[in-house]
Structure formats: C-alpha cells, structure tokens
Length: 96
Image (cartoon, rainbow, N blue to C red; front, top):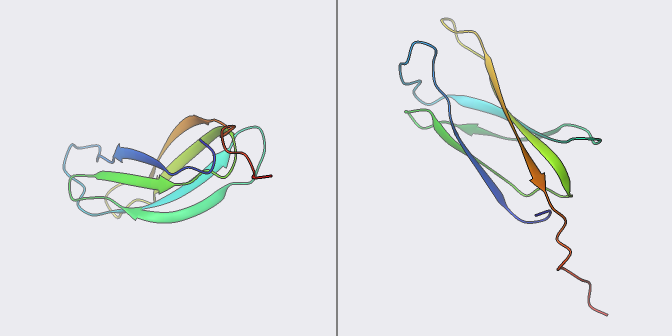
C-alpha cells in the first residue's frame, strides 16, 4: 500500500554459477504511467547473492523496482526488474 513499508527480496547470481560475494547494487523505483525514476539507497548482497530492498512507495500505481549491477573485470553488468501493484490506502482518513 502507498505510504507503507515494502520489502523486495532477490538473489543475484553469476553466469558461471559461482557465488558473487558481497556486491553493491544500484536501486531505482519508477511508477508506471508517469513519474520520474527515483534513485533509492544502494544495497549490498550477502556473499551468496541474496539481498533485500526496503522502500515505502509514496503513491498508488504499478511500481517497478530495478536493481543494477555495474559488472566487473570478468563479467558484464546486469539488470533485474520487478513490478508490484501499489494500492491506495483508502482506510487512512484525515481527522476532522
């Protein structure tokens, strides 16, 4: 829901199957149908490649999170995306 914390978990893997070690991923958020891409804090993977992105989407609408690895001397960079429907929190009402 918009305005509520959201956790996105994933796993970064190398093409040859080896564990990547700790790797920094650049993270962005974009609401589909409008809105600019927002840079979020970078995330570092665990040694086995797992990671969690924590964010609070500010508004309703389908929202795409992108994790970008810039690569290394041995591997090209990589990008992964996931889209979530973020609903409006209509139960939250202002006090009158």
